[in-house]
Length: 298
Image (cartoon, rainbow, N blue to C red; front, top):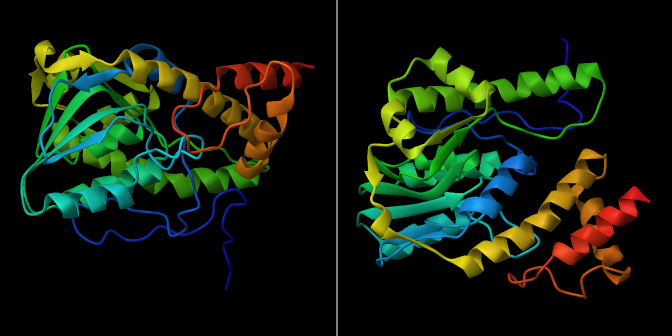
């Protein structure tokens, strides 16, 4: 009997869906799917500071990257969302989203957690729901979006290393996740699944009005229900510098642990940021990123 080995860069079979509304998950949760650097840059520069004007005690906020953020100690995870849902109890829940995405598989896990909630889930897209965050948004029984906000959908994006056979295996391994997302978007929007696939292939941004027109949201949020937090925007912009640098090193062939170790080692070089502990949450990484990129160039 022929044994089909897992792809070199991505391992683990796909778990079957546990219920009709659940999306498939990889058996190996060490697998990470990323948000592309340009999406992160667009979010941090333009939309990362958008917040709701008011919040209640039944609100879950997702104003960060999806998945645990090693550099800040933040990030939105399924574990945190499940804990918040337990604290809210058997009541309707409002989920406020402004996120560039992150780990697609963590986003799928969060979607599944929200769909298990017994009461109505209302999603409000305050700035951006991109990539993994757009999957989370689809968990809403009702979805509202700001007129100046965006939904962005694309195919699952990963970094993999190997020859053409390895790449073919990775593509085959990813196919059920892309198909599951396309089916989910199509079910929510009542759009043709083939058309959804084309939008995913094109990495499509949809403004609030277009998102409503295409069925990705039900209603526009009025502008007077949102506010711009300049301090949060500045933090997101600075933190994104080091995230982008880490991603660049991973794309060059380093593992995530190797990339992080290299960034930490360079803190003492001229132009780099002062010593800091990951998890501080308010670290300005811009000088570190500039110093590291200069070192890479030389």
